[in-house]
Amino acid sequence: MNTTIPDKLYFKIGEVAKLAEVPTHVLRYWETEFAGIKPKRANSKQRLYRKSDVELILRIKVLLHEQGYTIAGARKFIDGGQELERTVESSKLLPPEKVVSKLTAIKHELQDLQSLLKKQQ
Image (cartoon, rainbow, N blue to C red; front, side, top):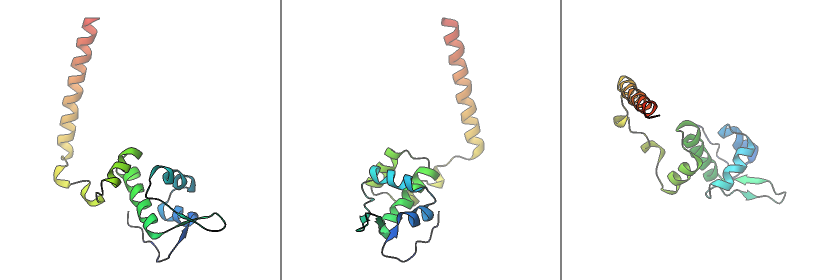
C-alpha cells in the first residue's frame, strides 16, 4: 500500500479514515488495541492525529488486512519493532505447484487418519 500522507501537522479522524480506507469506528477501536496510536484532543474533544499516528495506522492496516495478522499478532509485530519489508521473504515462499503437492499429501494423510478412526468405532 503506497498512500501519500499530506504534509500537515494534524489530521482529523475523517481524513485518517479516508487515507487508510477504513471506517472511523475501526480507528477508534484500534486506539484501544494499539498503545502507539495516541491522538491529541482539540478543545472540542475532536481527535487530532499526528503524521506518526497515521503512519502507524497504515502499518496496522497492512498487517491486518493484507498480511492476515490477528490484532494480537500485529501488536506483537509492532512492539517487536519489525519492519514490514522483512515480513515476507520471497526466498521462503514455495512455488504454487509445491504448495499444491504438499496440501494434497496432507489431505491424503488426514483421509487415512479418518478411515482409521472410523474402523476403531
